[in-house]
Image (cartoon, rainbow, N blue to C red; front, side):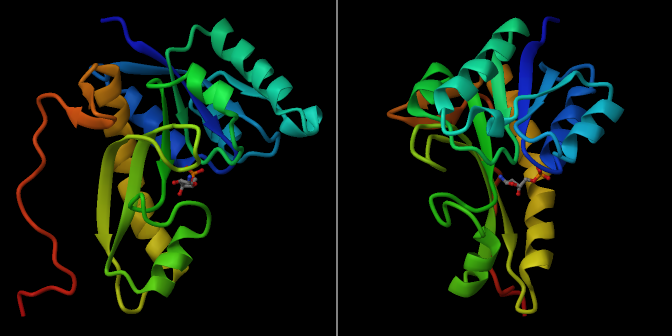
Length: 219
Ligand code: GRF
């Protein structure tokens, strides 16, 4: 089986990266992670990637000043050298220009810790708590030029507990992130994502039955 060649872009601890690397260790997983790139030399995920035997690279954005195009050209060169077919952003904290994004249209995924289109941007868990939502979650979507937008591939939801704080809620959402990112990458690598009017449909996978009510109505 020839597997789709994937690069993961990180800026931080890389737990989503680790989930993708772990999933790709299964012999029947349709994608292989061939490269991990960080835009910060101190990204904690680099050590995790090394320990997992991954090839890693750093393209330090601070070396390029305000020249986003030069930073992205260096990134693009690395991706081309490794014959990358799909890029996964996993906690990659650098805005990408429309030019770069459009070059990877339909081939670049991102994970966001909220149920998009709610809570785009940073501090999603604090804002979810402030808003008092009862259900929160995570989204994997194709990257589009506008931040935290783009066709949604997969979402996972969690209950917000009355006694949650940012950390407890983040931990519950993170567990969901680690499930939906490997799923979304698998679906993309298997060619099972169809775009219809700018929205994703998954071929051969049904949405599960059931509803999720918070607070529990089985009282
Ligand atoms: C995750 O919550 C991800 O959704 C967001 O940044 C965080 C990165 O965590 N984009 P990690 O580096 O994958 O552990």
